Length: 332
Image (cartoon, rainbow, N blue to C red; front, top):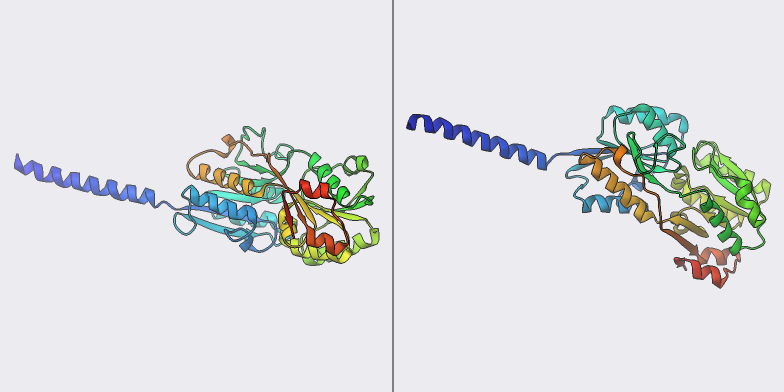
């Protein structure tokens, strides 16, 4: 009897040892995500970068996904050249990350073309029109994420706030990018109720020389104000945009607070912290086995209005008290 107990005990010990090793390996399992932005410094996508990415990484840490511990994050930039997005997308897909975070519609389109299997968490606009999802509640494919606009009415709201800041405005240049694949904005329908002629002024790519060219074009058009598109391609060059607007001496409405922090006049935006947290929740759920097609696409419900009073004073604008009262924050 004793002769059979020893081998049995040894087998049991080996089994328990292997089980413990397997459990430890599972606890230490590394996940890999890839983040792709259309332009700008990779440092913007970090816990010290833009507001939404600070919230993104803070939420991941809260959920137990910590970069440098159980999470590897690879960051990529398209350097503002849309023609290179497909090659960049294929390069990222070939590295086979667990999740790809695609920033803006053009990047998401390139990634979707490169893979139908790797989960994609995207931020942009109009997912149904672009074929990213069959419905917001149940996207159905390999893409989910955050839509930063509820509808085109947000542009009317932004233009209205700009008009209240400077009632004499009648001609506004809309700075956008020709490859944005963004929300369709009816310029006439948006500007006409306010008595404003809204003119599209598109960039061909998000590069410094192209911004210089477009602002020279804007100067020739002689508008009374500027409305800046919310497409993510522009955000890495927000400081340059603000400086060029400042040289033009024109009041401008921006889509994101980051522009106002860089010296822009005012912004009306979906609350960025919530956008970042929702994207992190999607990434975490996918890393833990959820299918992106089953995760509803988030649409913002909270918006924030920010005014830079110092910039207003530099422009010689007197912001009406009624408008200041509407602001969630006034930067002085």
